[in-house]
Every structure is written in structure tokens, then in C-alpha cells.
Amino acid sequence: MASRAPRSSRAHGKPPRTAQSERLLVRLRAICLALPEATEKLSHGEPTWFAGKGKVFAMFDDHHHGAAQVSVWVPLPIGAQEALVACEPERYFRPPYVGASGWVGVRLTPRPDWGAVAGLVRDGYVQVAAQKLVARMLETIGRGKRGIE
Image (tube, rainbow, N blue to C red; front, side):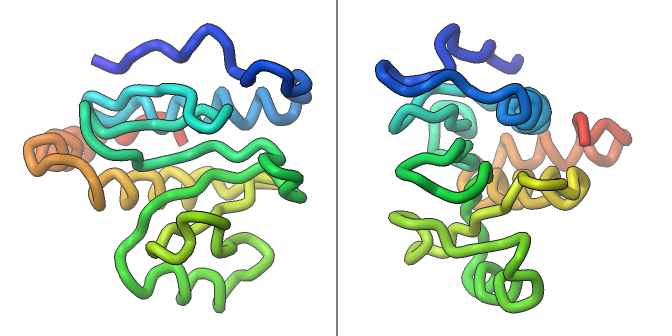
């Protein structure tokens, strides 16, 4: 069962989210929490999703440390980051801190491709989730329930 979102979506001292950022977060949250045993916690002042009790599979970035855009960061297989950034640098980027480990940043502004975002979030989940959770996700997809896109 998916966990509920934390009550406070902003770290102490941060300005409130804009209406646009809040809408993007709501849509991203639905995608992330549709995955088996996904949980959400604040990490570094931003909503972050974990696969079960395991590792992070998605991080929301609402202009964190002065970033120019709202984005989501996801861990992907080796080589995926380079390919995505080379193909569509206006949509994908190498995020700070975790980019060296193969994570990719996906810009959610000005207009996200929610199908691509959902697919990349699922790919990030597969990278870090326990095999039993990946199997449950694949079974759900096989039944046609892919979550909100």
C-alpha cells in the first residue's frame, strides 16, 4: 500500500511552492506512489520517494539551490544519462551531487511529457527496488495498471 505524503512539503525557512510547482508535485507524487511499497519522505527539504524500505528512486527538485527549473531526478542504468542528455538537452540534464552516479534530471517545466516521466520513474524504481517489488510492478503493468501518467 502506498504511503501518504508528508504533511509539510517545504523545509523550514523555504518559501511556499508556486501553484505550478504544486501541480507538478501532485502529478509526480501520484506516479511514484503508484509503485509497490513506494514511500515518500522529505530529504534535503524536497519530497523523495523510496522503494519499500530501500533506496531512493526519485527526488523532486523545486529550484533547489537556485536551480533554474522544477525537475525530478532518477537513477538510471549506466549510459542512459549520457544518451538522454545528448538527444534532448533541453529536457534532460546531469543533476548535481548524484549525476556522477548515473542519475538523470528530467525538467518538468515548462511542459513535461508525463508518459516519459512515468517511464523514467519506473526505470529508476527498477534500478533500486528489491526483486520482489520489481516483479509486483511488472505484474501490475501486465494487467494494464501503470499508475497515473
